[in-house]
Length: 118
Length: 108
Image 1 (cartoon, rainbow over the protein chains, first blue to last red):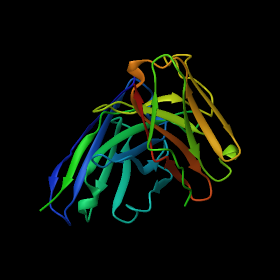
Image 2 (cartoon, each protein chain N blue to C red):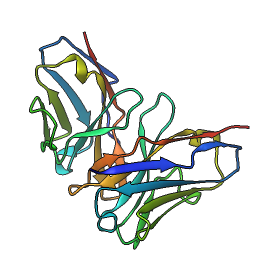
Image 3 (cartoon, rainbow over the protein chains, first blue to last red):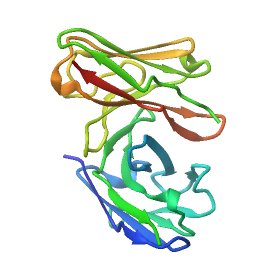
């Protein structure tokens, strides 16, 4: 079965950096695009970034463009999110998700919590 | 940017039907997906491509999409359906994925 497990969250000061990882199993990782989605405490879902299966293209939400970088290592079935210049408003649970065949978010990980605070 | 609007909350008695609207400009021309999220859990896809049902999702869940509104309908609501529900589309004009504002379904 499909499993997505995020790691790398924690507490970081404003202006700091953090790198999240998402380990994937149960499907052929290099055949599928992957997303990061975040959810601030008590708030709704916000799409963060998307990367195609071969990393040929990446796309970002307006609130993170220029600060976050999505990447992947298909040899290790792992997705990454490099987060720089972090702001308090980036505090959220970050989920990775597998792209489905219809542009849906087919499977989700449980998420990792990032807290940006001094 | 494209905006999807949902009512903050919907209340329904057990055994009745709940309808959750998702409003967007000409949303009927887009492909809509729906997710269920229970407290402390990851979202789960319950409807894909307007009305498709993933394996394991009960037939009580159905979707439709036309004009400026997409709708998720839960028939014969059960206590276990209590959750937050989000609609989602891909906006081709911006290459952005967009989520609705979310609706909390309460079973009375």
